[in-house]
Length: 475
Image (tube, rainbow, N blue to C red; front, side):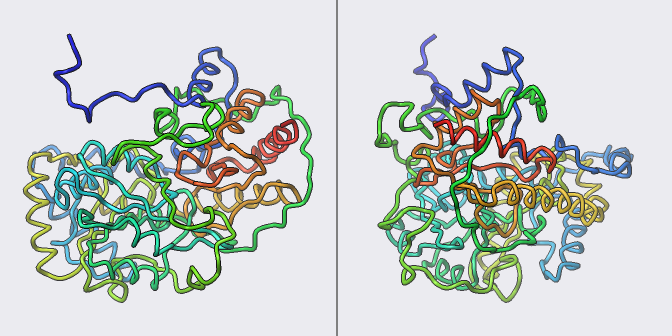
């Protein structure tokens, strides 16, 4: 049967990225793969969750079916009571429960946009946005986050990509993977465009970096020693991760494809649409001081009344990062801004979600008690992230690799001396069995960027770092 009966937006990805292909080949050959990129807290050997979590899902209360498009009233009330402990005054009517942030994005894109409209997104950032936008028939237009000792918003790049079909601005704070947060001044600059702001704050309650915006270590000539993988760090048996399966057309390694220039991508699709830059410099430095504001007060959450109380906005959050329980599948939207905006958006969300009813009863009834465990989850994550980051900085101190400063989240961005980070990642996996993510996957426009996970056990970091240095030395 021909493919003409299927929609274009449901076309399957083309050839896998060479890095993903190599990983699958190694796993099929039963060769060790140390996944230095993993973001799955359930496989990170954390002292979490406690034994008190599973019984929360064994109650008889969830056996009754109570369809509630916006989420059970009791669950929404439990959520806002928990948020009140954080100093947030959110009415239960403005809290909407969903199964995931992806579901939240899909519905917000439907409600704010008609097919062919666009939403502004930060670059670098998480590549899943491209796929979500493709399914909704909209375009993503990237605005730039620059780096000059700390990450900052390039407001001129926002102005350059905003047009008459722009319907919303998406912010990720803390950003994934940079771990950076917007300042209050930057947020008000975005609000001045007069568009609804969708704020992804899934990492907002994640442990903050104890090092903060520490100075980047001075890169000095350093040499790694070749590392044998006989004393392997750990072995990954999963076939691939979320990022590795994105098709070549979305993040081509330039030299692997034999083309120094990134190929053009169709509107609204692919990582290449998110590599637009109106600045004369790259993401990671040499950005003129006059073009970005000095460091200012960082926002904790848009839901705080002193941030954007009068501007239309939606905050996305959930249990996945707060409790390190992505498998529980519970997220939420917090509606904010003028009462008329919240009322209209709430009505439209109720209409859309009534056709889905995706959030399960067990997690709905357990939500309040689950949130009561948040401090325990944060402590477990904090201990791992802080020790892993300290080991990472110590391992690369005095070398040619820099660990960029971060504020939150559980990824670290490495700046490495190479012309093509995709090629470097392939070489590292092929020669040393270590899997990292090249910056091109996240939309970094400058080469020489790798992203690693801070969920990595700190005892594994030194050997992984030595392998990376050895790989750079052998180039």
